[in-house]
Every structure is written in structure tokens, then in C-alpha cells.
Length: 52
Image 1 (cartoon, rainbow, N blue to C red):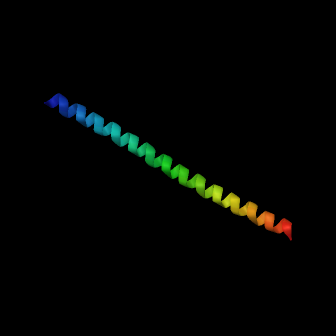
Image 2: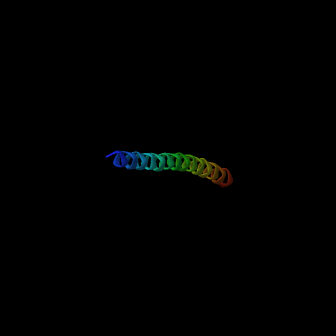
Image 3: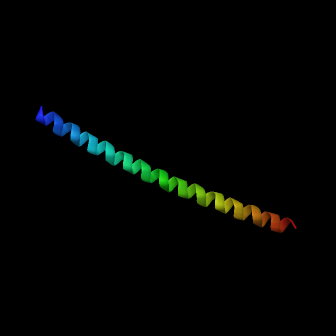
């Protein structure tokens, strides 16, 4: 019984670690998308400027 509890705790710690990694990846992806949108806006502005 005690060994099973120890194994379950180890599994929960592992799952928690994976979830933290996914959360960090999601944050990074959100920042990259934000940067991409900013760059697209800059390029659109440059195109408008060149079309004048």
C-alpha cells in the first residue's frame, strides 16, 4: 500500500512537471504570435507608405 502511494505521488509530480512545461510553451507561443502580428502591422504600414 505504501509503495503504491509513493508511486502515485511520483506520477503526480511528473504530470505536474509536464503541465508546467506546456504552460511555459504556451506563454512563449503567445509572445511569438504577438511579435508576428506587430511585424505584419509594420510591414503593412511600410506598404501603405510606399504606395503613396
